[in-house]
Image (cartoon, rainbow over all chains, first blue to last red; front, top):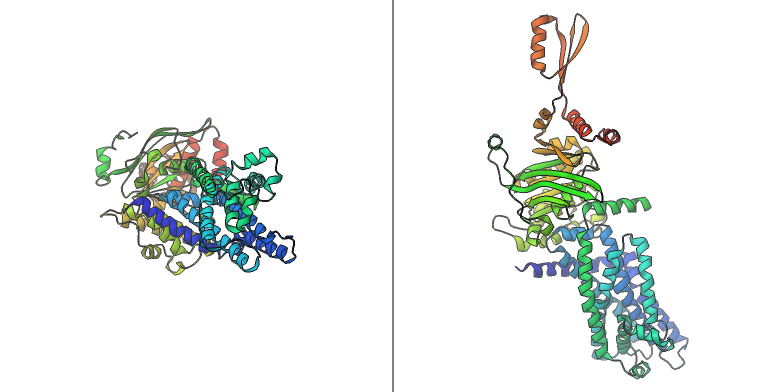
Length: 282
Length: 325
């Protein structure tokens, strides 16, 4: 039996169990899924009151919301989960079994992937039913959304993991980790229209994965005609795939190194110390 | 960095204690510094297959540091360490599969069901099974062994402290380890839970031929559980032996008290038997209420800790006394 393959399999089922367990915990589930629901509500409301003035405003809100959610999940949630599970000893347990860290990493990837797909379904299905001019049509858009999701998560999750490995106190650290995330979202045209930005911000935004993730999501969710409004006048899907893949590869290389370094320092007494620290705060 | 062979203990001693089993753990001149603080100043220890060894010492003596170095969770500053034939700093995954670590659970995996969690961790060991050591343990058999069968379907966070601890042990041994580490395993236990836990450790050591290294600051526990006690104080192993042997290591005088003619007497002596014989030779049957008090292991422990903690000794001893009783 190949030990790596065995650990990957154990990790896959661990990820699936964790995904199912997320649905048992109302608070956790809300944390994961309130955002898609919020954006769907906004899209339907804007559509109904006719805010769009001919523009498919509902679809625009949904595509922006979907990309925003993916960024928060990939960076902030991954960061938070890692910081928490380092503190409570989950990571240490993984380290104590042979190839446990491999299984742990696979499990986290499965959990994030399944959660992102769930959220996308929560956005796409109501979008198709209730939002006018929602551009999600047919298998092409479905396939595009799937690969953009997967590549996007692969590009973003290592960033979240790297941030999480530097956080020693999950409560304080998480707030700090939010700041760069929000800043990146701002300069990537997800919240504010990209064309209003000064040139140097546009240039900066286009080096980051979030802009390309947003472009990919828009290509799946907006009507075809809207491609003309993008900077290049098209969806640039090959570039989307390319940039996200480069970020994913780079991120995986750096994250592996950072995570291994972090995991090496974990021990029973560190978890114990974190526990005592948390008890003091409680 | 393969460690050199540590000189064997004397042949006479090996014969006296039966055939010496192979050493699974060898430590020589282990040192650990945190900044400029020396926590371990040259620890030597050897553990043989099937032995239950207690690393005993006051809090802050470096027990946890020692065990974490042996587990491969902490890098030592200097010294030679050989655990199951590898240096723990460079132990690979196959090495990891032969070692069990019992971790203190806190709130991790709270939503998991007991059986699912144990089964999940067991899966990682399957590729490391050998004909003489099938891995992992069957999940249900192991749940039975630790007495959690009826809680198998419960969520981990609903377990009581004692049940949770038994689950920790089950996870620690699910891979049928050849060497098991337990750090302060019964901290916070009530006496009943403690006794159950001791039974569990005995069964594991006997049935699985597992070498067990546990740390405790509780002398009573060390005496009950361990074949051999290693007393760690001041960054060194200051005593090494069976509980009985430990007692005899300290040349503390026995106290002889007796009454002659209604008058109570007290005398300290290193050889109480001879002293009593002399008493009878002198006074005959007039000697009444004769009592010989040998220092208990606890007295010995206290004395040793005090002796080796000169410098900050007074405070350490005072706090230690508080903790013991």
